[in-house]
Image 1 (cartoon, rainbow, N blue to C red):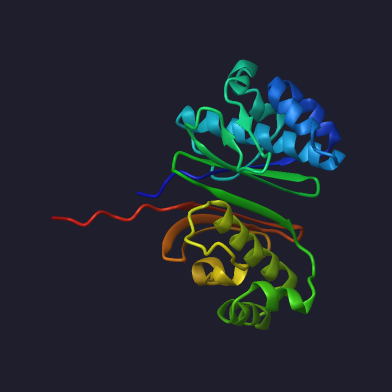
Image 2: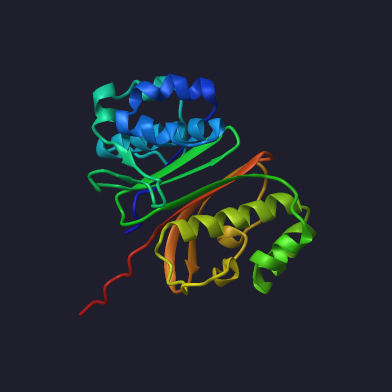
Length: 244
């Protein structure tokens, strides 16, 4: 059975962070304030609240495959409910809910924050701004098979920058699950991804669900690609027990 995967994106600037601050506990506010850069403080606050909202939605039996979080959505739950599910970290560790009841992952890019939450054991999300990268970036981080996939996509008219950003986001999301069997010293070329996700041509904008294999593990994920950003979220899929 595919684990539930709930994803939310939220505006992440100083104004949005100030509006969301009442949904953070005192310890969460201190953790956000400890970020040295103002933009990071806002991103951390907004991503945390997005994760809390996703948890509350899943706990209420509602799915949230991809939601742009707004004030009206937040009001679906009382403030006390948000304060009761604090998010710890980062402090050099992966963020988590204090009670460990759900797995979560956070990401941000510019004035956009993203969160993914699941009842499965792990989840990873990554959001990246679409931008051109030096040719050396692909050589350093992508496998020969991945570079071939990028070339095929570009040959049929897909923007190279968007494809590279989406692939990088997929690799980051997989890494952030903590579910890959990776060597102690690794490069992102050790994470080989069949690209594009689902094997089909990617339009812009697009939202797609897909199955993915990496490092001997199986994952379910969703990918979002627009002209401005790429987002990928993945959860490990448990192996099916043998019958008999």
